[in-house]
Image (cartoon, rainbow, N blue to C red):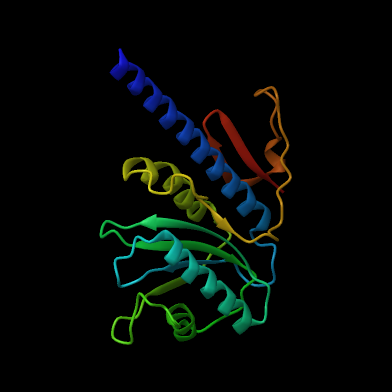
Length: 209
């Protein structure tokens, strides 16, 4: 009986965690839609990696925040961002980041800013930076991030339990959320931006024009 109770409690904890991650994913998606293409500069998708296999979350988060600070100083802009961590198979943390309002920065400069005073890299083993502009078809990028929130954390073990799953700027534009109590009531086709939807459990989110 005791083992059965423990099993049931574990299942309840897992179900609660999945719901929590689903809410985080929905929040990331809604916030992204509110900020997408709202700035003069094109939105950008950035991946930050290290050569060293580091799983120290506090240490890596510190390096990430220092990078963002250096980037703001370098561009002299108040860039905004949303980021999630991913644990690679080699047990190394890297970051996927959507950045809003960042002007063009040479890749060499990005490498320099990420590697500056970074204890997990060296001149011979520079940590990597990959960057690309996000076109108007942003759903693919967001889907990658939101699916990661649910899939990888459950399958690879919940190594982020007790921590924020999304790292984000405080001054991001807030989304306007319209709730429809009756599922038969939804925005008309001409009100919905083509191709921009996100399904979270029994809830469907639309980006309105």
